[in-house]
Image 1 (cartoon, rainbow, N blue to C red):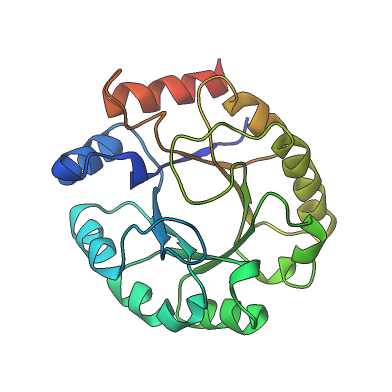
Image 2: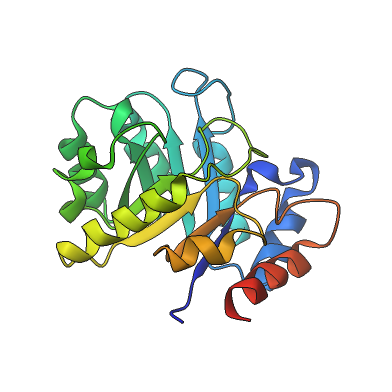
Length: 221
């Protein structure tokens, strides 16, 4: 099996001990750190901004996979690039100038990602799919951690895998939402190459290191 990227999402981390939890994720073999940025408008929650991304950048060498759940994300590209983001992923529903936004991200020297809400047809990605470095399937409705995986997401992952393969794209196919030990293998078998996990990794049941190990063993055993 191809190496599957695991990206712990800090939305579920203990922010009172964020530095420690980030170091545990890195020591546990995390490939990326996933950072959810919410503005209270595109989604019904408010999280963090460029200052926290900059703080994370000072704590770890892991790539920072920044998911912008904000309206008009093009307004903040430079801020997040300067803060140390490695990838910026935007929603097709959040900008009126999608191709320009993707181009601006790539011109800044980092990876550009695209995503969409669970009810938005995958065909809406077609005009820009060849231009992105990452395509993200949301397997929950964005805005909150701890939601259950939407079962219909598996078919969407499979369809997007086919769409990427059909154009010869080497973009990462990432899945975010409700990923845990019980469904991770199903998601990977459908075609995902990167998994975002929040409460499955950052919880009180086991250490961050042990949870990452359990998730990876689920994939390869």
